[in-house]
Length: 189
Image (cartoon, rainbow, N blue to C red; front, side):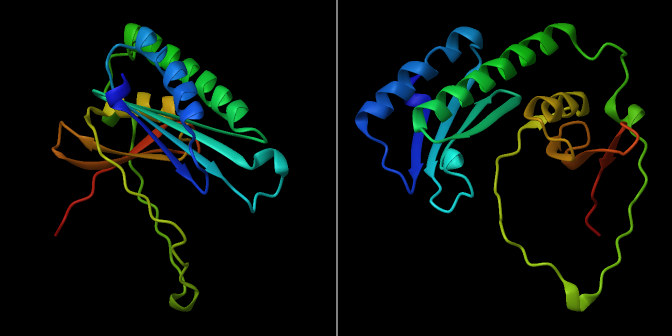
């Protein structure tokens, strides 16, 4: 597991003692889920946090074949934030294993469940929003059913971007106001 563990600090020095603490705690995840390829632990100190109780941030990401699990917790102590993030991730792993055993249940694909309705958004060119943050991530090839499961496991309420193996393209899965799902299949003209 140690070769698959990546620990990084932002505005925060990760000491050897803390690195050993994280390594020992993370080793327990292998017992729960044996298909883990990599675990990333990002530790940060946010000086400008509104509350002193939110200054230390621990974010954990578990990557495996066909899944990504992520948790983030904040606290006034880095160990407390780490323990809370690990507990949250442990619950996600248990839910993931349980869902894998049960499956979807109704036998329908996500495209059958989701009916697309395009949303048209008009904006004034003078009021264009500024992009405040850019995020890059690896896409894991998966089916639509797996994307719905991943969206639920990660706690993404609005949308989920994935590489759809059935159509060999990047798709966006989103939750509609009525609780159903929509699937955006972009095309290049």
